[in-house]
Amino acid sequence: MERASQITFFLLLIIHSSIAQNATTSGADEFPVGVILNLESLRGKMARTSILMALEDFYTAHRNYSPKVVLHIRDSKSNSIEAASAALDLLENYSVQVIIGPQTSSQAAFVSDLGNKSQVPVISFTATSPSLYSGSLPYFVRATLSDSTQVNSIASLIKAYGWRQVVPIYEETDYGRGVIPYLIDALQEIDVRVPYRSVIPLSATTEQITKELYKLLTMQTRVFLVHMSPDLASILFTMAKEVGMMKKGFVWIMTDGLTNVIDSTNPSVMEAMNGVLGVKFYTPKSEELDNFTIRWNRRLQIDNPNDPPLKLSIFELWGYDTIWAVAQAVENLGIKNKTSFQKPAVARNMTSLGTSRRLYHGESTTRHSGLASDLNPVIWPGKSTEVPRGWEAAVNGKKLRVGMHVSVYPQFMTSGKDPITGATKAEGLSIDVFEEAVKRLPYALPYEYVAFGTTNDTSTGGYDDFVYQVYLKKYDIAIGDITISENRMSYVDFTLPYTESGVAMVVPAKSSRTNNTWIFVEPLSRDLWLGSIILLFYTWVVLWLLEFLGNNTNIPGEVPRKLGIMTFFSLFGDSEYIYQNTSIP
Image 1 (cartoon, rainbow, N blue to C red):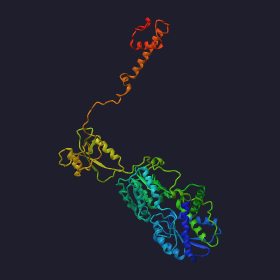
Image 2: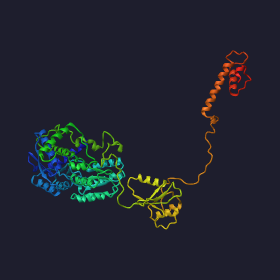
Image 3: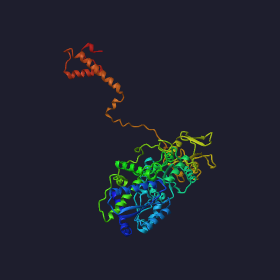
């Protein structure tokens, strides 16, 4: 709750300051607040419903509070000039003490400048561009999060899948441009390049957007990050599907500005966006939120009976909270009532200002390892379950010229001509090593083989001349069984050798087992030693039975001597000390 309290405290503080400076212009029982929204858009209508509900809920819970907030709602008509004109009207003719809105970052910049001059706070819960900050606009209050807060999440997503290049596609407005420097910095930290930036004007026609998409098709990168308004994004994704950029192999990522309102997108546009990834703010589920959503949907349908059903987003929740904060600030400065601030149960713990505190502190109930294997399975564009590699070979551009020299050892290099295309083809260890290295590159590398001696290189056919062609820029690289020598290193660079060459000698190896005490057992196998031992004991037992168990008194000596006789006979067959005829073979 610490971060939420800080935001609310700052909001209250700046409103208190403004009210104190302009208190003499306000009536005793009313506190005028201006609201500027784009009422021609669905988002504007949804925000209007949240604002009206918040004010009704606040004074239902605090009937005795005075002065009461009175809203004066104006339509910006999706135009910065109209938004500024509405702000002037509210300031001059209605003496509003606070302005809520407008919706877009470019409109907020215009209106906030007027707020600074008149010392009236401008509070926006939808203007997310990082270019709007309190340093240059001290009376601007952002009741939402800046777009810069999401760039690390986007970078983590890109890193998890191992993509190395990304092309941002953004609108040519303050909102579109504002996040790009932060995004570039986050991508550079994970060694991801941005080879191109696609900027789309708000006034772009479908033909202009299609032309830009075809330009993107000629590039290697297949990972695109879209940051623009929902209306412009709808056209972009529809055109992308028509030109074949929503099929297997492509990656599309949306920023939170699009993902947070995706549920209210036209079904035909949603169909074109199948497989698109997005980042969004997390709103924990709760019974209070469910109840509020039901009331909000019912109220939205009443306010806009001709519009299709829409789904509540985080921006509507922030708009609701903004009105609560303004109304409470007015009460805290009021003269009559000094009661403590308590929201009714229907709104408690409902928005990310109070339930998403982990977002501000970077905490989470689980830690993500940054590996794609830890993410849930994704159905990518083209209904593919295979993770796109993020690049394709460019359809235009210069190919890498790979010079090759036929080796006297065919295992290293052989070449020939394709009978159909006439292109040079090659096989062998050197070719396998080169092609495997190309496959492991994180980007496309189109190349073509050029056999040494087929161009006008006036060469003598030796390896020195072959290597020298790289220095002359007739080949971009040369591959083959090329020996690294000091002379050749003076004008070309070599890779690390992938095989060794030189003179080798074959010499007897001295076994480390010659000092082993048991080396005498090695001439015979284990089975032969086992058979010999069994035969020894068999002879030993038979001799014992025949000679010594028959009470033969002719055999002198104690038991040790008898054992020695049996062992000696078993090994050498000497019958000198044997007395029974049956014992002699």
